[in-house]
Length: 252
Ligand SMILES: NC(=O)c1ccc[n+]([C@@H]2O[C@H](COP(=O)([O-])OP(=O)(O)OC[C@H]3O[C@@H](n4cnc5c(N)ncnc54)[C@H](O)[C@@H]3O)[C@@H](O)[C@H]2O)c1
Image (cartoon, rainbow, N blue to C red; front, side):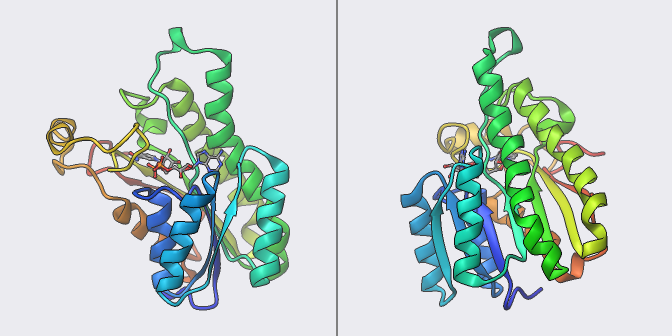
């Protein structure tokens, strides 16, 4: 897989131990120029710097994916700098461990806005460019929570948002397939990042892994490898699909 001359936008890629960073680095390692988008500009700058240290081009853009004006600016900046957008990875996401009985309307709206509306806004914003190019790869970040039901780390709003992403991706995949654009999703299980409020201790990770057939938590790099495949030219005939990356904790 080569991403030479390909331009990628990865949202939520500024987290120092996050999945987005791993995706940005994996694509860059294989030749892509990368737009690192995140609400945390300092974090995004650090990741862009790591990529530039690999002698690849990268820029950091501050973006809140729930705001259409921010997203339009992200896409405009990418086009001004690189002239094309081949890959969009809708990775920005947040979770909240909370029960429905305790959930406020604000909680619901916030989780749906970042995970689901953000995916819609960013996808919509790149479509005109990808259609003009006759080429595009959109990869979305769903979750095992979408399929299995929340569990301890995400509430029902998170499951709903991540399941919504799967339906959105399939419908969009049908709309744009004739333009050479594929739309796919990945559904990670437990991955070692800071999304649950900081990395768990090795003891806690062991405890969390008890019911996972692979007996361990996944790494951001393992998610990134699958995202890179779906973002590659070689995956041209895969669209509307979702791939589980969960060590066997959920099989469908
Ligand atoms: N870590 C896991 O176990 C796991 C499992 C399944 C799915 N996921 C999904 O993977 C994705 C990445 O999560 P992670 O574990 O790397 O988390 P993380 O918290 O390390 O990174 C998330 C990043 O998204 C950014 N972000 C949050 N809200 C944003 C917004 N409105 N606009 C732009 N950026 C925003 C944050 O600043 C952060 O840099 C998320 O969509 C998450 O739901 C994670």
